[in-house]
Length: 167
Image 1: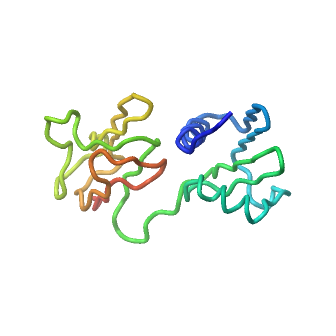
Image 2: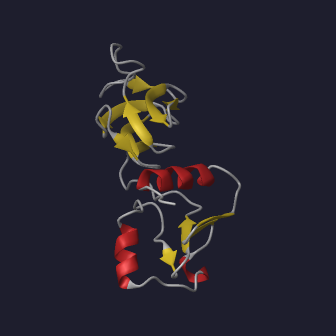
């Protein structure tokens, strides 16, 4: 079984949004074990330098490095999100891996523009994930300071999409 990068990221995102604490996937020579909530000190294995380099290319910065043995791979999903920005702006983060869209349809205006005032619960963009259009709502009221992603670009889980100057 060949597991592509986007499939691995989608799997990690889906598992992170559930109460599943451990999942093992076996197919032929591949064994993938995913555990949530473990710390680096809980893991006794360490990958070889060549495995570490190959694995680090597959994993986004928000996910801890994979650990491997000859026939198994372990992924730790952090239980807490990334640290907040050290400035006064709030980030609107992507809750899923997918494609960022600023408008509900190609021929319609964008949900928000830089300088627009938004309210908590207001739809600010769409993330398409696995052919499902997910409306992303602001969790803070304020003014859009910057839109960090271009229309149609892929986004990662927990990737900042916009900066908001909160009220």
